[in-house]
Amino acid sequence: MEDKQYKGTTTIGIICDQGVVLATERRATMGNFIASRDAQKIYRITDNAAMTIAGSVGDGQRLARILQVEAKLFELRRHGSMSINALSMLLSNILAEMRYAPYYVQVLIGGLDKAGPKIYSLDPLGGRIEEEKFVSTGSGSPIAYGVLEDRYKPGMSVEEGVELAARALESAMKRDSASGNGMQFCVITAEKFEIFEREVSKQVINA
Image (cartoon, rainbow, N blue to C red; front, side):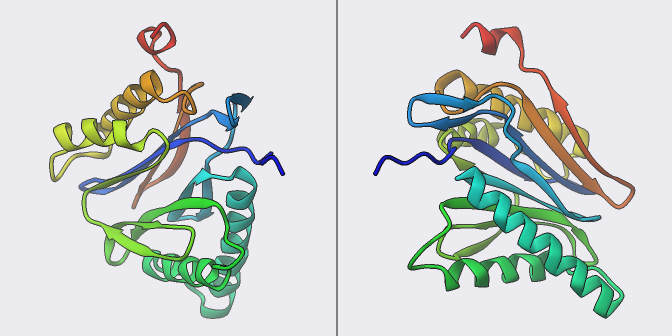
């Protein structure tokens, strides 16, 4: 049976000096067909944590809802927020339990807690890795990694992280047909949780 799930993406996570930056583009595809030019791929989980999705948009949305509910229940019962490590471990267990009927999605969970800025990447079978600098997932990630490897430096500010993520996304959108149609960012620091968008440059549109 032909797969009708919305897919395709480039997502990026960057550890910065005072927080984390998560970024995605907005295109979702079904094979060679552009199914959406305004796909939501960043989800707020708590006041200090968010996740990105690469792969099936439907699967990612379901996982985001599960994490939001579980995090809220934890907060009500324990009178405090779940750590980023605990959120990622919970999602890892959910994915591992469904390994024979997996969610077709790669996930980044990032945020800030008492342990500092954290980003974890998870594969569809529940594999979990703590990223120490930066990470990219999705069909455009090989291209994005070239920019991240070249331009990342430890101790970057979140403003510098946003600019680096934007540059990496633009490079991916030039070469990966499943990535495009604008960029969305999430910045998490001790002072703020902000999700915002940015248009792509004319160079990318005309590439």
